[in-house]
Image (cartoon, rainbow, N blue to C red; front, top):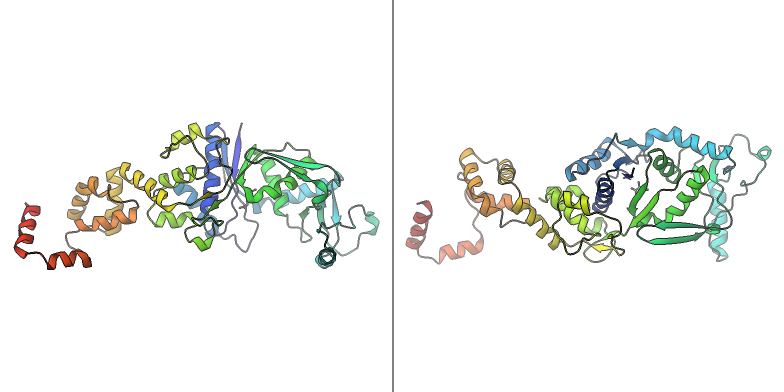
Length: 394
Ligand code: GLU
C-alpha cells in the first residue's frame, strides 16, 4: 500500500508552498488508494506552541486535505529516536563523539583559511572507549562510509549522485540528548511505513544523508520526489517579502478552498491544457510524471480567474449566507441578496468583492457613492433620475 505524509514544522502559518506539498502527497495517496498521514515536526519547543500547531491543522482542514489516522507529533517520539541512535552504536554503525562546538569551529576556520572545503573529521570515530572523557556527554554521529557514492533516484529530478567523502558524519543525537532532524525524520518515516516522500527540493541535499541512515538501520529506502519551489511573481523564491505566503491570508482575502487547491495543483503539475480540475478529477489524474521540473511563479491574475470560476459555480445559498453573515443583513435585505445572487456572482473574483457588491441590497444602509458616480449625478437632470428611480422600483 502506498503511504505518503506531510511533515510540517509549525511556524505560525501554513506556507502555500507547503500547502501544495501537502496537496500532492494527498492526491498521490488517494490516487493509489493509499494513506496520507500528517506528522507535525514540533521538536523546536520555542516555535511549537498550541497556536502554531493549530494554525497548520486548521488550514489543512480548510483546504479539505483530510489526513488518515491520528496526527503524529514528533516531540512525543524523542525516546524512540534516542533508542534508534543507541541501536546504531550497538551495531557499530555510529559512534560517540566528544568534540566540542569550539573544536569544530577551530577545525572549520583552519580549513577555510587554507582554502579547503570543510568536512569535519571527528577524532572519536575509531577511538577506543577506554579513552572516552568522564563527565562529558557525547553526541552520537553516523559512521558515513569514506568511499563510494550515494545515489538518490528521484522521481522528479532523476538520479542525483554524491560522493560519500563529501558527506560529514551526520549528528544523530546532540550532546544534550535531543535528536536531530536527520535522525527523527528517518525513524519516523520508517515507523509510519512511508513509501513515498514528496517534498520541496530544498530538502534534496538532505536526502543522501537520510538514505545513508536507512542503509545503516537496514531499512527499505522510500521513493523520493523533490518538487521545485514556488517563486513569487518576480521570479524570486517566495518569501514573506511577497506578502501573501500563508494559506490563512488567502482565506481571509476571500478565496475558496476548492479554488486554492485547483490553483496550487496547476502550479507545478499539468494535465494537458486543463485549468479547472475538480477534486475527483485531480485524484483520478494525479501522477508524479507530470510534475514540472522548474520553479513555478505565483500569478495572482490566474488565481483570481480560477477563484472567479469557483464563485460562479458555487451554490447560491452558500454564497448568500456568507454575504448575509458578513454584512449582518436584516431579513428583508437578505432576501434581496438571495434574489440578486445569480447576477452578483458573475461580477466577483473573490468573496470580499462579492460582499462589497452585496452592499447594494442593504435597505437600511446608505449606498457609498463614488466620486465618478457623484459627478454623473451632479450633471444629470433630476427629472431623468426620478424617472429611472420609478422604473427600478416598479
Ligand atoms: N519539517 C520539514 C519542513 O517543514 C519537512 C521534513 C520533510 O519533509 O522531510 O521543512
